[in-house]
Image (cartoon, rainbow, N blue to C red):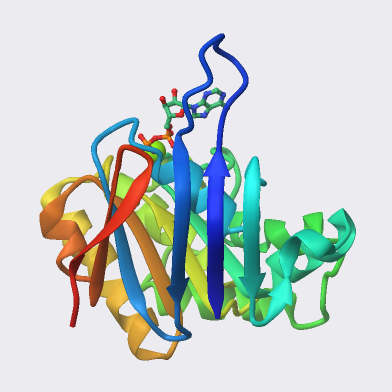
Length: 224
Ligand SMILES: Nc1ncnc2c1ncn2[C@@H]1O[C@H](COP(=O)(O)OP(=O)(O)O)[C@@H](O)[C@H]1O
Ligand SMILES: [Mg+2]
């Protein structure tokens, strides 16, 4: 369902243009659970942003469900992304003085598509991450692990096929890390495609397949 062909990414900030990503070709099937590993600065986030259609490469092609992503205009691409992909980040990116429920509903408000059953959907995704009793709490009244669960619920609001998570446990203690990995495991069992970015091998081991980024290239280090 995600097919990247000869992806190259160079940032034009420095005088010497060393590619961060160099000739990345990979495919991820529907329903897979894949980890992308690599040391800090190896380009994991860059690759995730490209695979998630948040950023474009310098060169290369990307297909999502058979559609050539770079042949689409920006509006069509963001509509496709909103429908099919949910994102979770290390820093949660919640609005602090806003309730869990309103945080979860934000993508619907931004996309200008606020359905009649929005509140029900918001409550449902919060229940899916075990926060039915925290719906009206402000984000800054929640623990880090609970905040990340709200962020996962927000990623689920449009019922996406694919979840990208960039170091989702990077700011969490081991108990919360286990809870987040458990939720991602359940989402995988429901048939969603999960792509997790991490520098932590114990986290990556929850995936079926591990890809390692090194010197801008990718190697498969674990195969089912
Ligand atoms: N917007 C940007 N402009 C210039 N350089 C960037 C930008 N984003 C990332 N980089 C550089 O690309 C490299 C890879 O970054 P990143 O993808 O964030 O790595 P990782 O997520 O593996 O830590 C780093 O050297 C970083 O400084
Ligand atoms: Mg990163």
